[in-house]
Image 1 (spheres, one colour):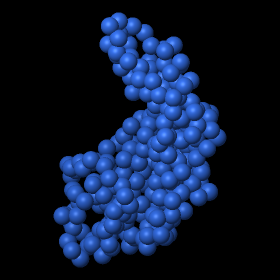
Image 2 (cartoon, one colour):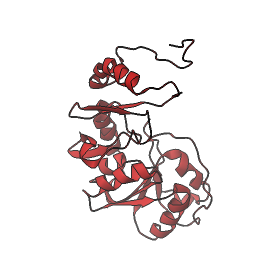
Image 3 (cartoon, one colour):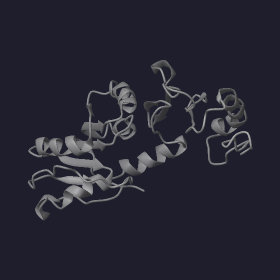
Image 4 (tube, one colour):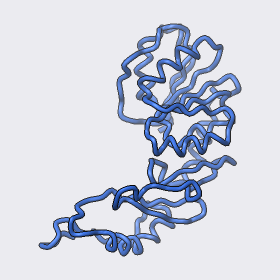
Length: 239
């Protein structure tokens, strides 16, 4: 609460009905931890509170490098037999319980197999790459955040068919499409907002697969479109 002495204060909350139980139960302790770390000069912070399948809870966001996570302290969850790791410093789905059902919907799509190339654009720590590792012959994960790349490489080390590419999607995705288009493969990519930019460069005869919907992010334009040749492109979006 705002006080005359401090412009920025604390909003008290003893629980959160939309958070995982371990996180909600941790909130009273979080208040005490924050009070210990705040100084009179501190103005604002974006706090991250995270847990995994083991119920362990950690938080960060006040002070430099407070979100850094060592490999031995990574959180993890298992999705249909595949364990994926994540850290405090990077986006990951907050409610883990929805992930198995989400992947069941994705698995049910008629586009997977050894002849499928999957492009995980803005792939983060590799949630979809790991989750689909046994449903595609080859997976390219493109990410530019160094903190996410560190965990993505850690996750990808479990699988021989996941290649992590550091850099901007706007640069690497067109190159990958142009390199892979000569292969007689099914090309699957997400999210739809980035893939849709390419569709206008492809002739109708190239679009032999159905376009459906899997996740939504802010649309970004790509600097270099691929050549309009025989690219079989399926963009999935389940939302």
